[in-house]
Image (cartoon, rainbow, N blue to C red; front, side, top):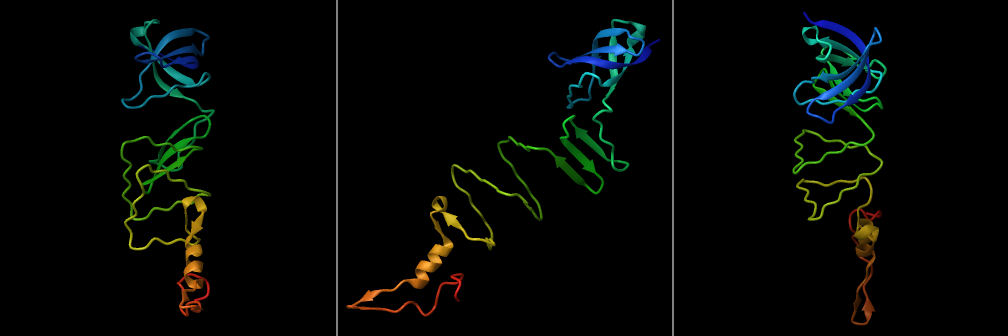
Length: 192
């Protein structure tokens, strides 16, 4: 016969092959070396004060296993049946929501990989600034590259508008006389 008890985590250690907990049971008993088995591919380290359910295998006080750990202080509620989330105490979260929506909320989203491949019908970025760094170059294969503002190069030293202004306003010195400014100006120069 196995005994089941509820308790509070005093300390958690994930430095070994299995996460180990120190637990204070509701009756005040302190139990050390409580093994916490998580599902394959998942790891976590609960905070002190989180609650747990402990099973004592064959009622042996020296062989305890945590079968569930919960921390209602930080738990976020599922928004609808069938949804789930991974979250931390400081508000970072990944939610798998109905309608095939994955929602991520965090301060910094970091990806480390050899190749980052996104296949999407549409991609939208809404940011104050976007910085790209590429040591070999950036290739864009698109029928049109459009911007609502100007395009600059060489660290902002020159822009497409500068080029338009130069081409549209230049003159040529010919045989002692000077030709007039072009009668047709470059598109986008502001006076076409």
